[in-house]
Image (cartoon, rainbow, N blue to C red):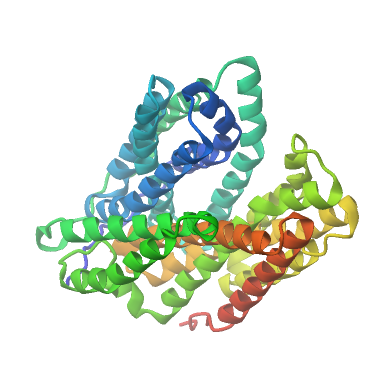
Length: 456
């Protein structure tokens, strides 16, 4: 397979980075803001907990499945049309959700929203790789991580405020002015250069179908683990289907002229290790979701105020992501990844000790925040940018997104299952977080296998 070629990058437009950051903020905000809206949606549409859970599952499925496709299209046709198209899809999905008179229409809107969201972050990261010199990429990618942190800080209180002063509709309508600003600024600032595909390679339709089927089976299997352990045993069938589809996808992608998941990326040792580490970083990020359960069960924090118990963690995450971006070129991605997993292992081991009181919990959560911030601060994405061929940068970034998302789902399923087996309550979650700390220690060991590229 002949790789596409890229023209030389033009001068960096002044508004380019704000466009990318606002787009990423919008996608991250919707992920963070949806949690408080779930009870309102359940009441508005008269659905039970299992059905309302589809609001999250549909978005995750479509976001993951579209990531590879949008990244592939970005490598083919340029970053600008795919980024703007992804933002447009996200806005249309948001509008459909807000206008939905039926629950099934809301799910369609979430699917459209997820399809758009799946293309925003990998394309934005690829733009940074194309347009910025190596000595400035780390800081920009670190700011993307900080943008994520800011969205997760502002999301829940913003949702709560909108539910008090307006209605759940505005949780989604708020995306429309943000998207309009991104589209207007993006038309002016985003580069217009095109990526010319080798020999006008046809779209990998078989790869699209198989990627969707494999990721759907994997997501449904992971999200059904806890349900399957207590009821209908569906999760083994889903995970088994994902296992069977994997070699078929590999065979198809090896024959494709321009595959959805380029096998070339897995021929580079440093990239393969990096993709393994993205699963671990996603697992570490997913572990944050259940920390409020420890604050409630062990320290007596009310459900209403549990989110505030994570404020030190979130602030540390923002500091870690911004600071790691500034230090990336000096320290190198390997050292930062090692530091991130070391902090996560330390923090999760400390939070697993549920008898330290609220002050102890708050202190123990701070290394977790720093570790998450460092890992989302650009080190993993920098390796993918440096190691991937320039014309496959969006595909390489898309795999980073997919790995992190799957790792996050694995964490949610594993922590919930272990906590339930441990009898629930604070002791059960304590045992679960001992396991999370061990996984982070294993990721630290894997990161030792990374080697910095030789300086020419």
